[in-house]
Length: 165
Image (cartoon, rainbow, N blue to C red):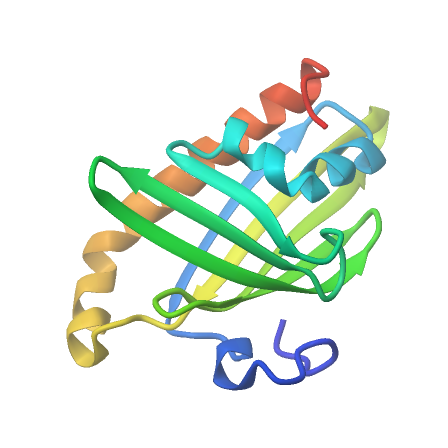
């Protein structure tokens, strides 16, 4: 996701940061159905814990602005992302462009035999806090990886059960 197509005006946020996390799941459903579920932004609330997602601008496709707010008690993390690429049914590219979370991300669907789909969710975040953020990342990374993987597994189960999209 280092190309510049579709990321005009997003500046450094469109460039990969030092914090990188990836999760993968195999879903027993065809790629078209899995992809449609990924594009159902506001349904992410059913598979990403403590998070409300809404489309702020657009229709959820290229050019749209998506807002995800994760709240745990009084703590709240607001994540704004611009959808920069939709290559149906294979890839959705976003750029996190909020005040705290910045950097590109991609959701990829790879069709497999017997109507199965591999989903890969990959994020490259700019780490806040300068050098302190880079030092803290190795400690925070396992939790980020675990949370992302658990959310993607929940997503896969909901798709397989026909509850998404």
